[in-house]
Image 1 (spheres, each protein chain N blue to C red):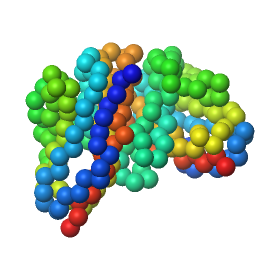
Image 2: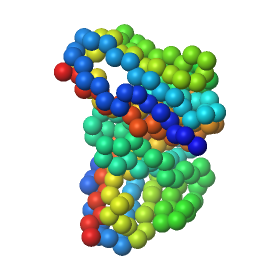
Image 3: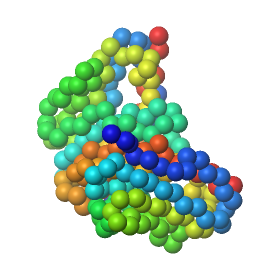
Image 4: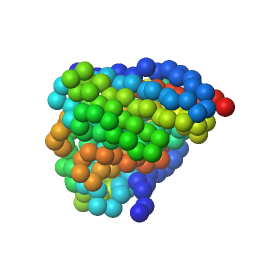
Length: 112
Length: 112
């Protein structure tokens, strides 16, 4: 069974630029999560989707971050404009029943 | 504010010893508890889940849950250098609308 796919794996941008990350969950997994993990910290949930609906986005900085999950499968997370403090690893995870999560390899973002 | 607390470590144990990792949580409605292992530069990998009070064993790993004390632990028997990683505790209340909360992780070092 293929795991969670993410791209790109690494991205370097300048502040105020925009960036987008893509995630393809495990086939059949209805729940999809985007996390931000800053070095030395645990993952922080940004947004949770159930199929193509948003379950929770209370920790998503909506002035600069947006996410969508069209057709209930793939998802994209966008940052516009990026700030220095957005430098982190962005993790996508999926879950069959909204309980146990399986993570993709992550995208390491560096904002200079 | 839901919190999950872990000692950041590092916890250093000799090869062959038992490593004990602890986690406390603040939200009493929490129902699902998870341990993830994260190697440096990699994404979290689910190693144990526990939902009921008591112990759950899987190979060299044992998860222990005490909901009255709001405490969950992970024991690793016969620790190996390959177990050296950061161990993340995650907690989730029941129902799809409750978001998972991660601790910051405990760094474990198993020395030969």
